[in-house]
Structures are given as C-alpha cells and as structure tokens.
Length: 126
Image 1 (tube, rainbow, N blue to C red):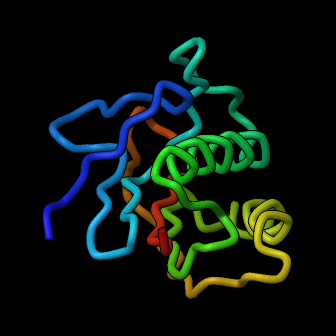
Image 2: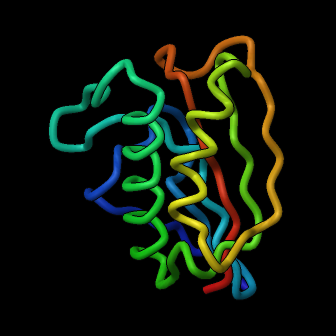
Image 3: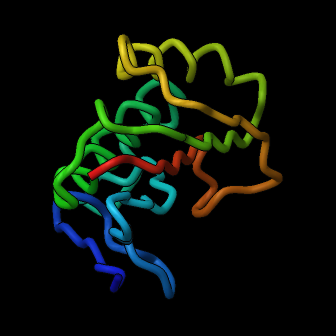
C-alpha cells in the first residue's frame, strides 16, 4: 500500500523535510506539533497551558485532514522542555482525552523546535 501525505493549511506547515502526517495501512502518523498559530506563524503564548491547547488545535486540524480525529488516537508522545510543566500540560491533555485515553509516553527534551515548551505527536486510526 502506498503512503499518502497529509497536509492542511489549518495547522502550521512543516519547518523541515517532513510531512504534517502520513496515512498508511489504516493509520495516520502525525508529526510533532508545536504551539504555532497557523494564522500568524508565531507562538500563541509563553504559558504552558495555552501552548498545550494550541498544540491540540494543530493536531486536531491534521487529524481531520487525514479523515480521523482525537477520538481515534491510539498513541501519543509528549515532549516537554521542562518536566516541571508536566502537571499543567497533563491538566489540559486530560480535557482532550476524556473517554479515549490513548497510550502515552512523556519525555523531557533538552530543546524543542523554536524553543517551544511542549510538542506532541500521535498515531491514530483513520
């Protein structure tokens, strides 16, 4: 089966040689999203909560472009610049996965693109 590139203007464009997502064999693999507002190209805020909300807006847009949604996510990976932000990120995260709680890994990264405080990638069923 061929891989299909997923792209939407409702989420920030890739800032490197990668795709926003790839559909393959009934799954969509979303690249990590950072808190860029696609309308301005800038971060929404320096606040971890507001950054997490924007990341979910971006992930939602990419998933919808792929014919999926947050309710079909099976795995996420959360990257934090500072693990001390875990509780604030997790509070927002929990609002997006009330019934469907996907598998998750959360790691602290030495540095995220554009010095974001949070980046989230996911895998979902199409």
